[in-house]
Length: 324
Image (cartoon, rainbow, N blue to C red):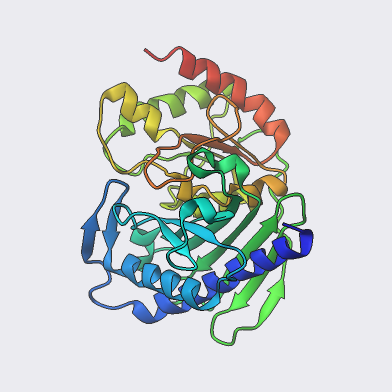
């Protein structure tokens, strides 16, 4: 795809997420927190179904027919391949779109914290398409009921990140510039290990405590943002310096079977943070290469900048190598 086409694709993803934001805002109600389904990937709530319906309707009405695409989306497990134009064989598509209509459902449906709508595009390479192939990404804030503004960030690989703050009441948009932290260490800053549920929490906290002790970081603040997209946002905005989600490693070490690790659709907008200078990688520091599907578990670590990564990553890697 040419540069102009990639930018058009970026704008399309933003418009899709504008539609999702509006649908979610109007779909809130007493039944929003009802469990609608339990899939191999996650628990799906009634509010999630609102987002999914908005996505499918939008693709039917707005996706360019000259760009046949396969859609990979949370909640579509067991439904077979979804393509647009409808009925296009997967082998005839040129793009793969992976998205999570609502990342952070639990926080949003109780009006505790913003969720995020995440979407990305990669050239179609069948089952070999992975996170490292993503060339366009967009993320849009789904604000709580009392918020009047929400952020939207998008990027084409190798280009500047576009960031706008949207007044959700009037639709007015104002550009802003996200700036990740340039701190060289985590002392007196926010740096968190994802440990949202009882399973694996003690194991993860032990790794966390040992890492900070060996780095001499005695005052580090923890913030459990129950959204991988939200965690990336905090990192790229300069609010957080370090994020580690090692749940797949913890579950494997403990023999725990869980449908609640991070998945590829949760991390599909990592490109935005990377283009801003953040380092997003696997726990050993290698590029993320998880397939663009809805079931693969992904362990990842995010650093606000390369200098911080060079300081923290070797220590974390050594600790993980010595875990029995």
